[in-house]
Amino acid sequence: MSIDPETVSAYNERARDYTKLAAPNAPYHALNEFIALVPKGGRVLDFGCGPARTAAAMRDAGLVVDAMDASQSMVDLAKKSYNIDVTLGSFDDLDKVDLYDGIWASFSLLHAPKAELPRHLAAIKTAIKAGGIFHISMKTGTGEQRDKIGRFYAYYSKEELVDLLKAAGFRPNHFATGADKGLDGTVAPWIMIRAYA
Image 1 (cartoon, rainbow, N blue to C red):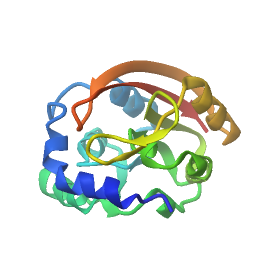
Image 2: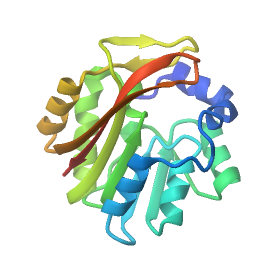
Image 3: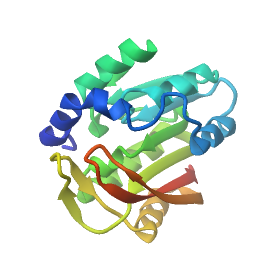
């Protein structure tokens, strides 16, 4: 089971603080590229959508958007802030087959234990159409641990993620790295990978 109660509680308590990490209309290069690569009117999933700013941007760009998050506070905030319906659910609840033209998992799957990531990637591969686009962002490092506010994290190297994506049947073809301050105030390095199903 991939829901960690302490992690969900941290997001429930700090949902509004989370929305302040980036300006509401900040340009997001990776998101713009993702939107441009999805067929016009295509169906996408924002998997672990948080307050749904990204899901709203996809919707406003003309995509058909499904959004899911495990935090009730995030679901409520998404509906209030962006008038977007978000399904309350965990990574275990993805059970679609060949439905999505693209799946966006930005800093969400890093809350799943490492032992469970392969089956989550398999479910994503099943849910996405052949040739569909998968975006994944994760924090880089080693091991698993909790941050200062109790959230569970699994950390990966680029090589680990590439191997896991390939094992799930994806073709990684674009990479970006950086570092940002998170909700707990700590600056952490990250990697974004775009892959094709």
